[in-house]
Amino acid sequence: MYSDKAYEKVVNFYELEQEEARPGVKRSAYATDEAMLVMNVLERGMQLRPHVHEDFDQLAVVTQGEADYYIEDTPHRMTAGSVLLVPAGKYHHIEPISDEVHNLDLFFPPREDYAHLLKYMKGL
Image (tube, rainbow, N blue to C red; front, side, top):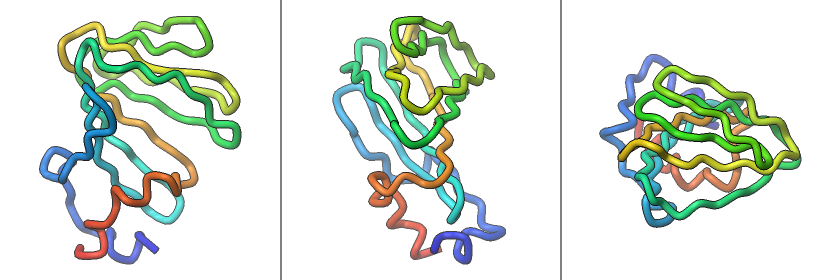
């Protein structure tokens, strides 16, 4: 689906159209048939949204800024370069400490509910 178009193409998250998911949260995505990367640009004071994924793990990487990433009620302090595995079935959310946090989420397989973020890939 996506792989044929993506091979050997450079894409910059910051040049893609970003979706405003909710106040203080913007995101863009990139995917192959097997994996999806979602870049989230988060603002301190954003609307928090604890949620759970019952059927897949999530890898969360902070690439800029500082945040507390909660799994259930336990905060995990993350700074640029931090990686956290969020197990399937666990409530989680991120709360920025710095003014802006860039959080890269990795999903295997790609999330169908985020497929709309990949419309641009048809034109690669």
